[in-house]
Each structure stands twice: as structure tokens, then as C-alpha cells.
Image 1 (spheres, helix red, strand yellow):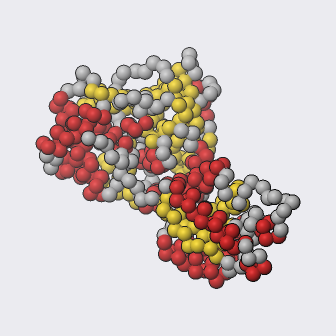
Image 2 (cartoon, one colour; image 1 turned 180 degrees about the vertical axis):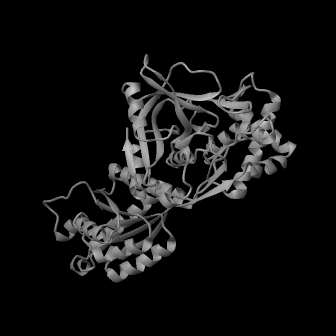
Image 3 (tube, helix red, strand yellow; image 1 turned 120 degrees about the vertical axis):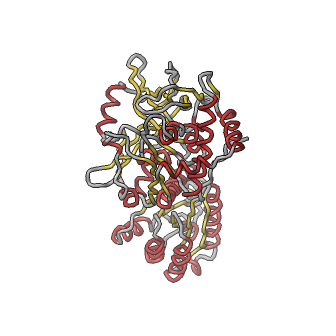
Length: 471
């Protein structure tokens, strides 16, 4: 029995290559060489985990207009214009204007350097992709079209790493624009920092916020069968180490809620979920809220980030980190260890199981601190190595922003209280780092993901036209 990720739609990248048609009769060998370069770029693009819509090679404005229509109809997430040699801005401007997608210009000459002693004019022109780049930049700027560029040579791995960064960022942007984000229950009383104006999500990112009630979950949990419960408990038994504090009845209830939660996500076609319900005296809604940790953790590991405490912006941050390949687990401050120079961070409740340093532990708790109810909770430490803390700001003017900081998760003592806990070394005094992080205006929750992701997040911020603050 395995936990399968819910596969997102692949990023759709439109590719158009071009050069000035006046050169072809003058230098007969030039166009075939440039077309070979174009085919190689298309081939490499296809290895980046994206769907490539290659509209071929254009040589004049008329062909550019035809390519623009084809790419518009394809609904691309990113347009890549390959400048193989000099070409006029009028050839690419319609592509950028009509597609509605971010534009990346690439200038990849055939090799690292020309053979200056033997090259003639035609051979030089194959290395002249940098020539039109300022012209494109000037024209796009005057047209009010944001763009970015990567210059290098065909087999330049540094250039391809930068191109891949833009492709990944475009995929995350597309996921946000098409995303459906569940918000179930109500705000944790008094948490003013996590309150989100729901209109601001589609305004800043696109997508849709589906407002749900706990009764939407309740009716689905009531329909879960004994067979489904048995299967879910078996899956959890494989995914987790079970502590001796796990009460069988609580484990069974968590499995039932988990199966119902999967059905809720499927019925509403959700890409993320944030939830909270206070409840009272052990009634069913309190039990549902307390029973969601197992199911939310399993969903998060499958690519549907789920955050407690009604933390919509953090569930979005978790989704962004997950789509970048870094997981992204629900996180807040827990303590500062000045003896070792570490910031201890994590959270009670759901976690991203795929980035655990070991087999995560399912621990039974008789009380959830700060929340009503009882049941099973997740205990784990994020995989040791490079990590990025990442969260979303909501500014006074209604704009969102990113906050990110790169560090290292390291070994050390951990509490055994059914919480996720990671020790993060940011290479500086933990108190000073905490003060600077808090001064950004971040809420008291964020996502902790594996890998150093600031460069990727900066690319995404560029595509979304929002600010990124690095701590």
C-alpha cells in the first residue's frame, strides 16, 4: 500500500525561435544551423518536466503573428522566445501581447566562444542572439510587458538551471491562478495576524477560495465504511511508527475522518485546505476538528497542503513550497536555543510527511494544547540539511508579499509531545534572526521546506509582480 501524490497539470511552455529572414539568401548555411539549435532547445525544454508547445521558427513579422495566435490558443503558462540571431522586435511583440503569459527571452549561442580566426559573417551571425536582446527589452518595456532573460550557450548548465527556475516558477504561478483553496470552519479566536481578506487571494494570485463548513466534512465522515477505515488504518500503520500512547478508538476515528476528508477534497476539487473549529463538550464538530491531523498530514504528503488554525495564507505558502519540490510543513516558533545557536520551530497538528527525517511518529494525546479535543498527533523532524522558511505577507494596501530565509536543519534534542519540531541554524544569533524575521510583518505561521529556495521564490515573486523580503 503506497501513498500516491495527486499529480498536478504539467506546466505548459510555449516555444518560438526566430531570426531575421533577410539573412537566409545571403548565408545559406545559417538557417539550417539555427533550426538545429532550435530543435536542441525544444529537446532540452522537454526534460524540465513541462509540456512544450513548439510553434517552430519565425523569420518575419507575418510569421510572428501566426505564432502569436497559435500560442494564444494553447493557453501557455510561460512563453519562451529563443533569440538565435538578430531579429526585429516586431516579430516577437505580438507573441508577448496576445499570449497573456509571462515571457522569458533566451539567448543561447552554439558554443562558449567563436573560432575567431576561421569564422565568416554567416558563422558569426549564429552567435548574435545577444544583439536583439536590448531591442526586445526596450520594446517590451515601452509596451508595458514584463520580461526576463537568460543568456548563455546551448549546453551551458548554468543557463539551463536558470531557465528551469523560470519554468518551475511559471508552473507555481499557474497552479495559483487555477487553484481551488478550501477554507473550513472559522478563525481561531483572537488571531488577528492570520485573518485574510478572501478577496485578496484571487486579486493577488488568481484562483478561488471555497468557503466550507464542518458539516460538509461531517456528512462525508458519516458515510465512511468499515472497509475504508480498515484500509486507512493499514496505510497509516505503514506510514507512521505508532507510539504506545495511541488509543485504538482514537486511531480508528482519525482514520474515519481521514477517509471523509479525502472525499471532501475530491468533491470540491481542492488544491489546498485551511481549517479550524473550536467545538464544545466533545460534540461531533469538536471531534471532527480534533480528528483531522492524520488525514491532513496524509493529504499534505500527497500534494494537497492542509493547515490548521484557519491559516489560509500559510496553506498557500505550503502549496508554493510543495510545487517547488521542497515539501513545506506547517510551522511556527517553539523556542530559541541560545546554547546551540538554533531556532526551534514546528507545530502541533498536520505535517508534510514526505520531508520527515525519519519515519514519522503518531502519538496519542489526551489534550491538545490551546485547542479542545484529544486524539492522535504527528511528531517528526524535517530532513536535516538545507531548508527555507517561507511565508506570505498581507500588507496594509492589500498586496501580498513573500518572506523567506535559508538555513540548515540540524540534529539536537527534541520534545516528545506529539508536535513537529525542527532545529534550524540560520548561521547567526537566534534572537537577532527572530527579531528580523518578525519585523517583516509575517504572521506567526509559515512553511518550512527542504532545499535553499530563495532564487526560485524570487523568480515566482517576479512573475506574480510582488515583493520578496529575504531575512
